Image 1: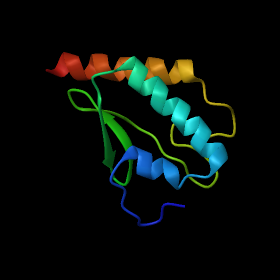
Image 2: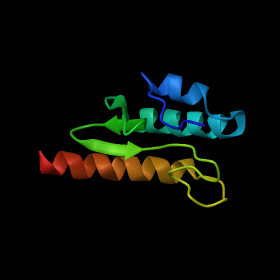
Image 3: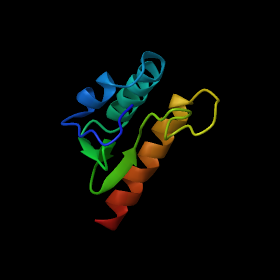
Length: 95
C-alpha cells in the first residue's frame, strides 16, 4: 500500500489506504483532532502523526492491522481519545 512512497499530508496518505481501513483511520483522525484541536498534523516516518508540545501519537494502516489497533478487533475511539489526552498531559508536564 504505502511502500517507500512519501506523502505531503495526512489527506494524501489516506487516499492510498484501502476503503475499509480508510473509513476507520478517518474516524481516528477526527477523534484525535477533536481531543486536541491545537495539535499539529504531520507526516513522520512516512505515516500520520500529531504533535503538541512534542509527539503525541502516530497511526497507520498495514496489510493486517492498524497501528493503534494491532489486533483484529474494532478500535475503541474512546480509548484513542484517552490515549491522546494522556499524551498531551505528559508532554505538557515536561514543558
